[in-house]
Image 1: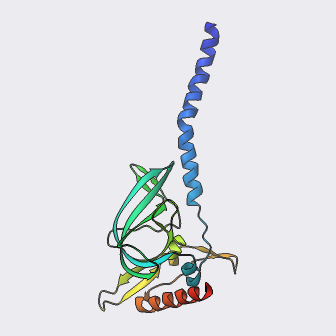
Image 2 (image 1 turned 90 degrees about the vertical axis):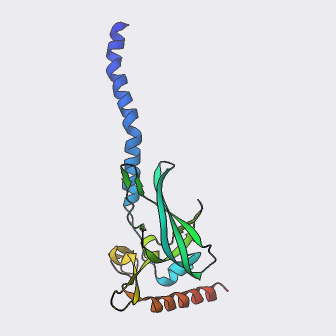
Image 3 (image 1 turned 60 degrees about the horizontal axis):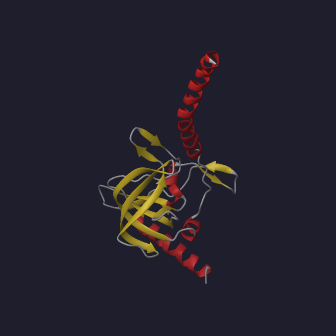
Amino acid sequence: MPRTNIKLRPRIALFRIVLFFLPILIIFMAFATASATTLQRLSLDQLVAGSDAVARVNFSGAESRWENGTIWTVTTLRVVEIFKGNLPEEIFIRLPGGRVGHLTATVEGTPRFRAGDDAIVFLKTSAAGGFSVAGWVQGTFRISREPRTGTQSVTQDSSAFAVFDPATRSFRTEGIHRMRVEEFRGRVASAIARSAGQTR
Protein backbone atom coordinates (compact mmCIF):
# COMPACT_ATOMS: atom_id res chain seq x y z
CA MET A 1 0.00 0.00 0.00
CA PRO A 2 2.73 2.58 0.78
CA ARG A 3 4.25 1.97 -2.65
CA THR A 4 0.87 2.59 -4.30
CA ASN A 5 0.52 5.94 -2.51
CA ILE A 6 3.97 7.02 -3.65
CA LYS A 7 3.10 6.27 -7.27
CA LEU A 8 -0.24 8.09 -7.09
CA ARG A 9 1.04 11.34 -5.60
CA PRO A 10 2.60 12.68 -8.84
CA ARG A 11 -0.63 11.87 -10.69
CA ILE A 12 -2.72 13.63 -8.06
CA ALA A 13 -0.45 16.68 -8.25
CA LEU A 14 -0.74 16.74 -12.04
CA PHE A 15 -4.53 16.41 -11.81
CA ARG A 16 -4.67 19.40 -9.44
CA ILE A 17 -2.56 21.48 -11.82
CA VAL A 18 -4.89 20.63 -14.71
CA LEU A 19 -7.94 21.56 -12.63
CA PHE A 20 -6.30 24.88 -11.72
CA PHE A 21 -5.41 25.93 -15.26
CA LEU A 22 -8.46 24.51 -17.06
CA PRO A 23 -10.82 27.45 -16.26
CA ILE A 24 -8.10 29.90 -17.34
CA LEU A 25 -7.67 28.03 -20.62
CA ILE A 26 -11.43 28.01 -21.24
CA ILE A 27 -11.64 31.78 -20.64
CA PHE A 28 -8.66 32.39 -22.92
CA MET A 29 -10.23 30.31 -25.69
CA ALA A 30 -13.53 32.14 -25.29
CA PHE A 31 -11.80 35.51 -25.66
CA ALA A 32 -9.82 34.30 -28.66
CA THR A 33 -13.02 33.10 -30.33
CA ALA A 34 -14.92 36.29 -29.51
CA SER A 35 -12.16 38.54 -30.86
CA ALA A 36 -12.23 36.88 -34.28
CA THR A 37 -15.19 38.93 -35.48
CA THR A 38 -16.58 38.99 -39.01
CA LEU A 39 -19.18 41.69 -39.70
CA GLN A 40 -21.34 41.72 -42.81
CA ARG A 41 -21.68 45.08 -44.49
CA LEU A 42 -24.91 46.92 -43.62
CA SER A 43 -26.40 49.86 -45.51
CA LEU A 44 -27.98 52.82 -43.72
CA ASP A 45 -31.43 51.42 -44.57
CA GLN A 46 -30.47 48.07 -43.05
CA LEU A 47 -29.18 49.75 -39.90
CA VAL A 48 -32.42 51.70 -39.52
CA ALA A 49 -34.56 48.60 -40.11
CA GLY A 50 -32.52 46.58 -37.61
CA SER A 51 -32.62 49.16 -34.82
CA ASP A 52 -35.27 50.00 -32.24
CA ALA A 53 -34.01 53.54 -31.76
CA VAL A 54 -31.52 56.01 -33.22
CA ALA A 55 -30.13 58.83 -31.12
CA ARG A 56 -27.36 61.33 -30.65
CA VAL A 57 -25.67 60.65 -27.31
CA ASN A 58 -22.92 61.95 -25.04
CA PHE A 59 -20.71 59.75 -22.87
CA SER A 60 -21.48 59.74 -19.12
CA GLY A 61 -19.53 56.78 -17.78
CA ALA A 62 -18.61 53.11 -18.22
CA GLU A 63 -18.08 50.04 -16.04
CA SER A 64 -16.63 46.65 -17.00
CA ARG A 65 -17.59 43.54 -15.05
CA TRP A 66 -17.72 39.75 -15.16
CA GLU A 67 -20.98 38.20 -16.31
CA ASN A 68 -21.24 34.40 -16.61
CA GLY A 69 -17.51 34.01 -17.17
CA THR A 70 -17.21 36.80 -19.74
CA ILE A 71 -16.22 40.46 -19.39
CA TRP A 72 -18.90 42.94 -20.44
CA THR A 73 -18.83 46.74 -20.46
CA VAL A 74 -21.92 48.75 -19.56
CA THR A 75 -21.73 52.33 -20.86
CA THR A 76 -23.99 55.11 -19.64
CA LEU A 77 -24.96 57.65 -22.32
CA ARG A 78 -26.97 60.86 -22.11
CA VAL A 79 -29.51 61.23 -24.92
CA VAL A 80 -29.16 64.56 -26.73
CA GLU A 81 -31.38 64.05 -29.80
CA ILE A 82 -33.76 61.26 -30.85
CA PHE A 83 -34.15 60.32 -34.52
CA LYS A 84 -36.19 57.15 -34.03
CA GLY A 85 -38.00 55.47 -31.13
CA ASN A 86 -38.72 56.59 -27.58
CA LEU A 87 -35.84 56.91 -25.14
CA PRO A 88 -35.31 58.23 -21.62
CA GLU A 89 -32.77 60.96 -20.90
CA GLU A 90 -30.16 58.36 -20.00
CA ILE A 91 -29.55 54.91 -21.52
CA PHE A 92 -27.22 51.97 -20.94
CA ILE A 93 -25.36 50.05 -23.64
CA ARG A 94 -24.03 46.53 -23.00
CA LEU A 95 -21.17 45.27 -25.17
CA PRO A 96 -18.74 42.35 -24.79
CA GLY A 97 -15.16 43.08 -23.81
CA GLY A 98 -13.50 45.50 -21.44
CA ARG A 99 -11.00 45.55 -18.58
CA VAL A 100 -11.45 44.12 -15.10
CA GLY A 101 -8.40 44.34 -12.85
CA HIS A 102 -5.34 43.30 -14.87
CA LEU A 103 -7.35 41.30 -17.41
CA THR A 104 -8.45 42.87 -20.70
CA ALA A 105 -10.85 41.25 -23.17
CA THR A 106 -10.92 42.79 -26.65
CA VAL A 107 -13.68 41.93 -29.10
CA GLU A 108 -13.03 43.27 -32.59
CA GLY A 109 -15.91 45.17 -34.11
CA THR A 110 -17.37 46.46 -30.85
CA PRO A 111 -17.41 50.23 -30.37
CA ARG A 112 -15.83 51.72 -27.27
CA PHE A 113 -16.97 54.99 -25.73
CA ARG A 114 -14.81 57.40 -23.73
CA ALA A 115 -15.11 60.69 -21.90
CA GLY A 116 -16.00 63.52 -24.27
CA ASP A 117 -17.51 61.25 -26.93
CA ASP A 118 -20.37 62.70 -28.99
CA ALA A 119 -21.97 60.17 -31.32
CA ILE A 120 -25.05 59.03 -33.19
CA VAL A 121 -25.83 55.38 -32.42
CA PHE A 122 -28.29 52.85 -33.81
CA LEU A 123 -29.70 51.01 -30.82
CA LYS A 124 -31.06 47.49 -30.46
CA THR A 125 -32.92 46.44 -27.31
CA SER A 126 -30.88 43.88 -25.35
CA ALA A 127 -32.51 40.82 -23.78
CA ALA A 128 -30.20 41.32 -20.78
CA GLY A 129 -31.47 44.88 -20.28
CA GLY A 130 -30.56 48.22 -21.78
CA PHE A 131 -29.36 48.35 -25.36
CA SER A 132 -26.71 47.05 -27.70
CA VAL A 133 -25.47 48.85 -30.83
CA ALA A 134 -26.94 47.52 -34.08
CA GLY A 135 -24.09 46.44 -36.35
CA TRP A 136 -21.56 47.38 -33.62
CA VAL A 137 -18.97 49.65 -35.31
CA GLN A 138 -21.28 50.02 -38.32
CA GLY A 139 -24.02 51.49 -36.14
CA THR A 140 -21.70 53.99 -34.43
CA PHE A 141 -21.08 57.43 -35.96
CA ARG A 142 -18.66 59.77 -34.14
CA ILE A 143 -19.30 63.50 -34.27
CA SER A 144 -16.34 65.87 -34.53
CA ARG A 145 -16.13 69.64 -34.80
CA GLU A 146 -13.84 71.55 -37.13
CA PRO A 147 -11.98 73.97 -34.82
CA ARG A 148 -11.77 76.86 -37.28
CA THR A 149 -15.33 76.89 -38.65
CA GLY A 150 -17.19 74.95 -35.95
CA THR A 151 -18.70 72.70 -38.63
CA GLN A 152 -19.79 69.32 -37.26
CA SER A 153 -19.29 66.11 -39.19
CA VAL A 154 -19.89 62.39 -38.62
CA THR A 155 -17.53 59.48 -39.25
CA GLN A 156 -18.66 55.87 -39.10
CA ASP A 157 -16.53 53.64 -36.88
CA SER A 158 -16.49 50.96 -39.59
CA SER A 159 -14.67 53.33 -41.96
CA ALA A 160 -11.53 51.99 -40.28
CA PHE A 161 -12.72 48.37 -39.92
CA ALA A 162 -12.84 45.73 -42.65
CA VAL A 163 -16.38 44.35 -43.12
CA PHE A 164 -17.56 41.57 -45.41
CA ASP A 165 -19.38 42.66 -48.58
CA PRO A 166 -21.60 39.76 -49.75
CA ALA A 167 -22.01 41.38 -53.19
CA THR A 168 -18.29 41.12 -53.96
CA ARG A 169 -17.59 38.33 -51.44
CA SER A 170 -14.63 40.26 -50.11
CA PHE A 171 -13.61 42.33 -47.09
CA ARG A 172 -13.70 46.07 -47.61
CA THR A 173 -12.82 49.03 -45.42
CA GLU A 174 -15.45 51.62 -46.13
CA GLY A 175 -18.09 53.76 -44.45
CA ILE A 176 -19.26 57.32 -44.01
CA HIS A 177 -16.33 59.66 -43.41
CA ARG A 178 -16.55 63.32 -42.37
CA MET A 179 -20.10 63.88 -43.64
CA ARG A 180 -21.78 67.05 -42.42
CA VAL A 181 -24.19 66.38 -39.58
CA GLU A 182 -27.04 68.11 -41.42
CA GLU A 183 -26.63 65.86 -44.45
CA PHE A 184 -26.38 62.73 -42.31
CA ARG A 185 -29.48 63.73 -40.34
CA GLY A 186 -31.36 64.04 -43.64
CA ARG A 187 -30.18 60.62 -44.84
CA VAL A 188 -31.24 58.99 -41.58
CA ALA A 189 -34.68 60.67 -41.77
CA SER A 190 -35.13 59.40 -45.33
CA ALA A 191 -34.11 55.86 -44.33
CA ILE A 192 -36.56 55.95 -41.40
CA ALA A 193 -39.34 57.11 -43.72
CA ARG A 194 -38.60 54.30 -46.18
CA SER A 195 -38.54 51.75 -43.36
CA ALA A 196 -41.87 53.00 -42.00
CA GLY A 197 -43.41 52.81 -45.49
CA GLN A 198 -42.32 49.18 -45.90
CA THR A 199 -43.89 48.12 -42.60
CA ARG A 200 -47.31 49.56 -43.40
